Length: 411
Image (cartoon, rainbow, N blue to C red; front, side):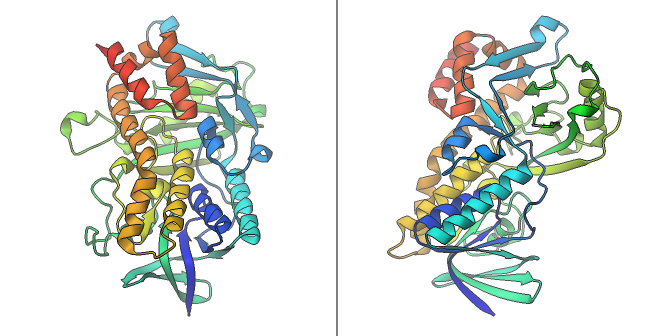
């Protein structure tokens, strides 16, 4: 069976839904594919920064469980007074949600947009089988419960995450690397997390934190951090490594291999911070990075983790997922007079450029910070820089001004 659609999107997470939402509102017919049925569990701390909330086309207030006006930054230091920096804001810095509910809510909003604009049809698939580039379209073979189906589309959006097949299969097409492997620019971080209900916590936390503190702790491992994200009824606690790993040996950081992020490390961290001896559910997730060097080609547009667009400094991925999904949709709409492969790739590169410039800055900042975290903490103790860094994290602006001021500070 062959099904034709204006656009096919692989992956119904935030990136895929952001693209589908805008395309539907522009009157396009969209097929949205996913392997899972929603709601489904997704390993993610799911902190929504102000820039993320501003990028969304709709309010997600129904799934926000807590708003945080303070961030606690911690580091390993023999001096207790130097170990912690608290950064406060009059307005919420970050909204807390549970990824399972957040994704399901975004999908519902997207399907509603499909009923009010073009159309969005959600199809459950088992896996991707093959990609073929035709003169005027892409053919995608997928396995479903009823057998093999071929989808034909003028534009394919790969929103299937760091472990998705769209990126790898696209490498076998003209302009790719010629094999089902990740391109050289693509790198990964890795994180493990668990949830602990407030009811299971001791009266006083052994690490000295308050149950509702939003904590970024850079002491558990080099090239990454541990975190406490307070939700409505539980704490999300985790450890992850995010520091950039490049082909340039001088930029590589020691001991940042993802293998360091394991169950033992997480259990040790949970005992230190929460006084809990065992965890029932531990989940992990790879994070796609290196996307500041991604160059779109052909009719396949990669978004979110599939394009390596996770921020290597903070590990934040939802904002990039939403913005890149919207950029892919804008590129497709801009080429409505004729979706030629080269024009589509050029349009997407143009739409994606502001995000990639910000991520290139984050790549440089992450390399500098994780090599010498104390320098970053000194910056955070300087009121003017602290305010600017907070605004950059929460609002995404102005990273060029931040770079200039940090460069002067580092001299």
